[in-house]
Amino acid sequence: MKRFPRFFSRLTIVILVSACSSRSDETGHSFRIFEENGIQVAETTGGPKYSDPIFAYEEILTLEQDEEQEESLLYRPYIFMMDEEGMYYVADFGTNRIAVFDQSGKYSHSIGRQGQGPGEFRSVFLQSVNAGYVSVLDTHQQRISILTYDGGFVRHISFSGERLDLESRVYEGPNGTNILLRRIDHLEHRPKIISSWRALVYSADGEILCEVETEPVHTMTLSPTLEATTGGYYQGQPSAAYHSGKGVVMSTGTEPVLTWFNLKGEIIQSIRLNIPPEPVSPDERSTLIARLDQQIEEAQSPVMEAFRIEQKKIAEIPETKGYWCRLVVDDAGFIWAQKPYPYYLDEYPEGSTFLIFSPEGEYLGITVLPTDWGTISRGHFLSIDSDEETGLPIPTVYRMHPTVSGLDYE
Image (cartoon, rainbow, N blue to C red; front, side, top):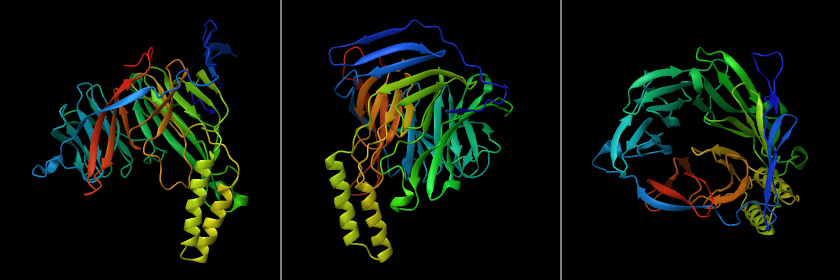
């Protein structure tokens, strides 16, 4: 990781004094915490603690949309979250507003509307719902809007010198600070896309307090030619997530390491997974190659045929998968690391698979989401599916239940 603190001439490492501890079981799973060069290290070896998926998902309700009540209709819902009382907040691209539904799934009210004024949006990316306030990213207007739960406008936040995009995430930190997480694509390496993730901490008056960035890694190739591709078609992806009680966790996705930083840019913990990456399974490879063979046969032009042939060459290279491609830290402090899928797999699995780490850094096991897309919020999984007949969105709420004993999850 590269670290660029702006307040200090050198980076001071926080020394965490903790006793070395470890535990293991007959399955080969072993977890230990120790100190290395003044940094707390949490290391898991031998595989996950639990062999079965550690969460079950109980479908509890579908958010109600009434054609006779226009404001209850969702046209392009994208992200939705829960507040402390169990109300549901849905970011709807189709109307550029936040639609709010009560605990029973009935429409309650809306926050914001289409426009450019205070409390108005040209695009809506829901960032957080907490402590009475809703945070919304508007990439078209390059700003964050803070509003109350009932829709009252509070303020705008902007970041000079940083371009906000749909992958950007902004969080409110302590003492008026703001934390900006964003992906950086280093396009000067074309045809390769070299990417990293950057975290910046801003003071209340907009000054950058510190900056942390992952090492750049090769994440994509614009040209399909074999000579231009060094990473194969399975990749880890750089990612970052924030937790208010700890700081920012970051990873390149290509190494089994997660690194926690505090808001001064200092490393406070390294989480290591001492497990080799997964090989590409024969079924996955045959599925990819069969689909590429079909696309080559159906190609409408010599250029497209050559493109698919080169993709097939890449798919035939023996490869292993990256470790993960997206990080999420939930309200309980558990780290969710999404397993990557093949780039050229047109039909993704029905549910994404995540590796789950405890707040202490132990690799617990996996969970498979009931659908491929959704939001984890306050012990619930909130998914947005679509009706096969009408194509209309179906927002469905699932309650999460631990399926293993001893999992301290609330």
